[in-house]
Image 1 (cartoon, helix red, strand yellow):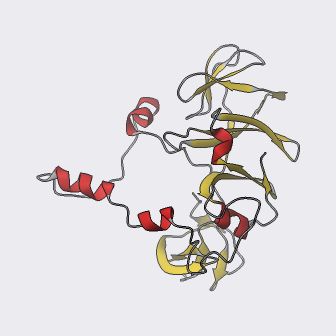
Image 2 (cartoon, rainbow, N blue to C red; image 1 turned 180 degrees about the horizontal axis):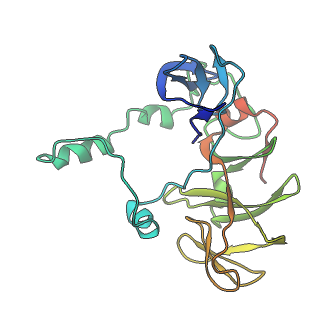
Length: 239
């Protein structure tokens, strides 16, 4: 997720249908510049070299959980025939990229671009802190949905729910105090430092000493390893 504002101007975007490093490129309607959806960088056109500001989006969660946390939310939906709702359900079940997801190929370049630290199609949680990058492989979350980590002196809380693929990464420092977290139930966690309970969807403390405080959410993305490594070859991998 990126801000559409750049140098005082608001841009609108579309999908170009072109690839760069085996990943789709966006274009802006105003200048027709091509932009990487992985890095937010303008790679060709009038604005080449510019970079969009990445925003920390909310994790992917079920609608019922989103509505519980944000009852006043507005919904962006695609119109469909209300007389035949079953057609909409069929559309949702069909995945045009099922064969791609199941196979070893990484794009039009096949499997040539390989960083052997992980398998090409290993899914990772990618996070950036300043100019530092780290990948958290999905298998790292098999035993626990929460990882307490430090990236270049910045204490991090990485959260990934393997059932829903909900992902969030936070700084785990609040008011100058570094907290250590453990999972409780669902999308909640408890910090062992103060005993406060935290909602990992909103980042808010819901019960305990720090109730009302907010964790700072960092931009994170669920992505194939080959794509993350091709764009950020200097990335470290959590072990």
